[in-house]
Length: 290
Image (cartoon, rainbow, N blue to C red; front, side, top):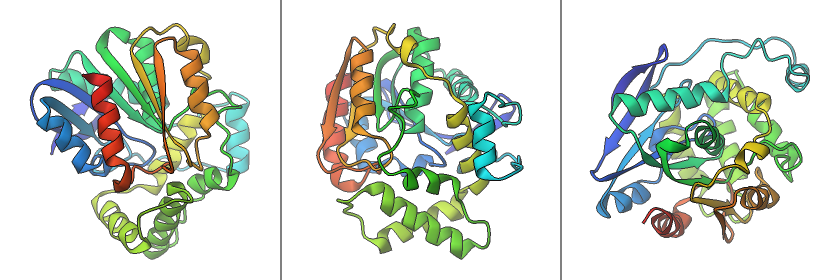
């Protein structure tokens, strides 16, 4: 893993394999090590180069100190009224980070895979710089349209904002509960395995403040529906059938908006990219980029 200085921050990244590049964009507070290794190695063996990285405020990239003032409800109401001057950054800044990183490692045109918040960043990238992309894969994400971004279980979304600050043990228990909930009703990963994953994430560089910063950036983002309708880029929308955070209607709307998009629903999958679904994801992704 290496560090690249871009836009006033350092981004940790890993560039592996050789051939046509695929850039992977992670979700809220996710780290590059969370991309399934089997998925990356399969693509590398098929002759692709993979670029994974930590967003600012995640993993081994620069963490920002930006304490939010006031209660959560009040902060969200300010954002909904357009008062976003106190945000440390927006999704467009994450797009700029990605482009600067790609330039730093000499990747000009690439296949783009965005997961959750990463799918939102990927959409903005496709809107602003479609010439940089060969294809677009959007996994468990939405267009920013308020109706389609409302999760079936609002408690799941709220739990992303309600990060405990008391101790590392309480933070670990929170992360284990959160990942289990996001995996959905058909979660195939045991609590002990989630705990092992979360212990590694905490040790490597999970940021509770960074999670809040990124969630606020999502909340402040504008609806991308009109701009997405103008894209002609080959696009695949992948949605977990039982995602408790992103409703299926969000994926259906993305497919309807984008004239060259196809929708693939993975049965039983929740929001998490669990090992049980890596084979299906690999096959779909290879079908999209080949």
